[in-house]
View 1: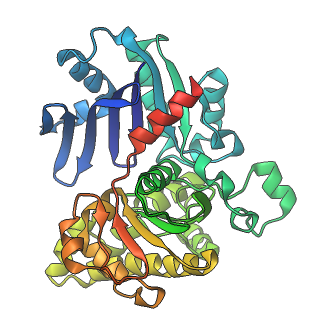
View 2: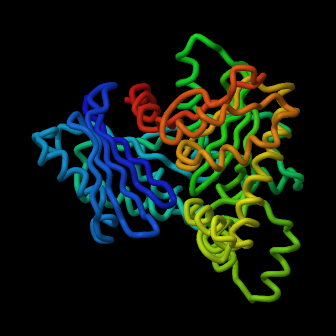
Length: 389
């Protein structure tokens, strides 16, 4: 069975063609500070090319064209299923399910609650239908389903219960596909871990405590805005600060949401960019605002890891994944520098070597195993589709 995986992030789009459980080709479309780029990976290796905004906006059609050009598909009708990563609040979206008219209606109903993710995926679903018609079943792969096991204390807000039930105001968590893929990956080895903390660090960042291979607690909540400061998202903010901003700036709810999602985080604090590569370059030049932005990001991650260490009753493994977690040895070093009290000790040489790969980056005498692990969301989504078809 040939199926396509669609994974839209906040600044990137990823596609992969699978034949049963084997990945045939993937393409990663990215929005970088210097422009747009696509990276293709297939049997003949990896190829990167500059693209324009038009191709980025029509990336699904571009990917289908590449598959036909390479003769990996002889006809679009060979595709029997498509799995789309869905990041959306509400109980309805906490399960993997077939995307039908009811699903689309419910998605439209909550589109304003998570605009950074829902509106782009609505466009993606429209592009898929325009390209393939009704020849393939489309499945929603919930980014929250993995977090269905978090504790009651972690799921609730300190709000009136009647209001929570009426409006569905619970902590759902996100990055669940990524965390699940990483947990499955490390369990393939001979060493087994009971208590794990997974740091998914990228344009959106979250940390998840995992106990016995199940989500125990996570930093994102009702929406992907809660938790850590991120590239352009504020993360946790005192609600009274938000009231002050509304009073001062006269924002309506849509304007406040746009502000918190796109103009805050490291971009807002640094005044320059939310991209950690740019932030690190500016720090090297002595930019104090950039230093403060990264210090806040690192501090909140350290604090959360310490809190989850306590909540789990100890820690066996600390995992770094996501674009920053996998690629930035410097960010990993800064995070781990103050974690010696909970048994974390990096091997500096291994950490630098694991800039873009998988493997142990802790020293042999570290009580907590530290690993950099590639997130394999496409493989995880393909596995989930097999259970739905």
